[in-house]
Amino acid sequence: MTATAGKLTLQGIEVPSEAINPAAFQALTRRKRNTEYNRGWAGNGSTDNVELRKADIISELHIRFSGSITTVHSAGAVVPTFRWPYDLIKALKFTANGQANLINVSGLKLKAREMMGGSTDLNDRGVSQLVGGVATTQGTFALASELWGIAPGASQATSATLPVELTWIVPIAENDKDLSGAIFAQTSAMDLTVAIDWETIANLFTVSGGDTVTMTGSLIVEAVKYSIPVYNGGFVVPDLSLFHSLVQTRVANGISQGDNELRLIGQGAGKSLIRLFYQIWNGNAPQTPLAATAANYGNQGWRYSSNETPELFPDGRSMRQWNERLYNCDIGSVWGFLCHEFEVINAFRDVVDMGSTSELRLYTNVAAALTGVPGVEYVQETIFAAGSGS
Image (cartoon, rainbow, N blue to C red; front, side):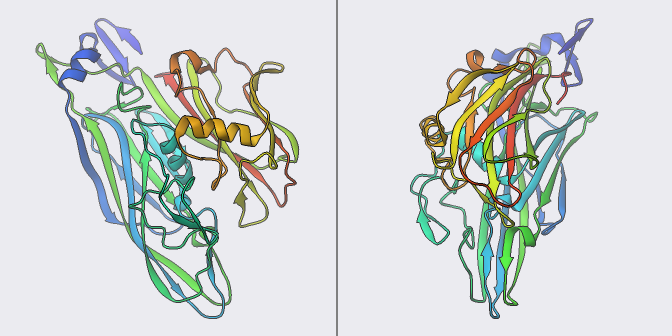
């Protein structure tokens, strides 16, 4: 946030300084939900580009895919990989006000974050999905209203058309209460775009024996927004001096059994790390996520400077149990997520200053024997001052 002669620059937009009035904004604003995009889906391996309407203050996006899988049976089978169903979104990228890729993650990471954060007490307990042919009621991230068509690891050896309903939430703001990181959209002098890259059939399904699989569907993108009210003759807005970012990185070189230290990208002054979550994808294609167990993971922690280690879990199960207590969701079972959490308990006290903790690193000891070309996929969730960079 910068200031000039009675004006402030918030997220690259200049507004009168008297317009910053969080209390008046919270009392007078109106929550809205608008459909920004509703049309045929671009298809596997393609991209849907959505330009959001420039109005109000945007806090989150709701993405919905509605369609079907059609299998034609010959002499083999169609088996979904563990990228199915939520990594149907290969990458979702959100750009706003000159900040490229504030959000840049896959669909499964969005579902994980939905279980970890947000303004609801959402959990997946009691929602049954078949995973590898086994009925699973915890850790799938599924909603009862969603339809997977075929579950990962399950074999489809008949000709059929199976309905698919999938949803994702894109957290533009860190939360929907104080709206930290929400985007000021009430100006034409900005760019608000969402690019959704869709995964290929080959990475979602293993097909054998001359069988085939195709997908069709439609895409709906809705925006949750807050009106900009008028108070004492002028408009008022909350403190929009921050950006919220969710960025995924894959490291596939040098991941091995034993100790691994991964230097986090994008460190710098003015940025705070509020959540760091990750998976290891193991084996040859199609890879599977490594479950968060004591047999698969030894010590788990994060480090900075020469060898400062503020938190160190004795093994993957210990960290998984802590995560389940925090989120009321077993994020480490089906999809193998582990998360270093700095926001849920007390954000102001626990967040990690990425300017003062030099050489910030993710430390993971892998106890299991790895095969193929394993890779770590980690997501940094940060909040940073507008102008600090993404």
